[in-house]
Length: 224
Image (tube, rainbow, N blue to C red; front, side, top):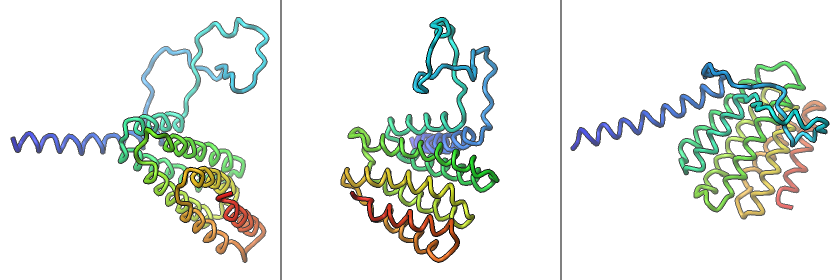
């Protein structure tokens, strides 16, 4: 009997480690696609883009969209949330933001920095919105964890003068904060983060002062 329990315990460890490992590989783009003759194309028609369809014939062929690692990772996080696997959700979000930071701190393009920050933070916002569902049992834990992670992420960006990225992060974080306030969740950690960033940037250059003013305004309007 003891050997059976030992095997099951070991399998539980292996399953969790394997999930985190695979999730990180997805984010890193290391998971090779299986060679399949699938009609994947950048000509995929996305109706949400407001396209004018002049020829109905273009709707007939089966064309699949090109999926990137962020989209696939988002899908994995949603599945973990639907299954109430809090540990996977927690470590998944952590790895997600770590990969984001790595990409941003390696980037030399301001335009790419804003675009990537918007892309990654929109996923975090969607995760939070899903976490507000009555069917998700860890809403408060999720919000507390996200608040701490976003503070660490924002202060790291500030340390490396990534002001364009911080602006996007602050706006997205404030949007989540206002939604959290309406749901009765604590916003004190976010206010602390905004004040800390404001004080850090207030007496520095023009870019820093802009961020300080933004953080101040968002902090004052967080629960409006």
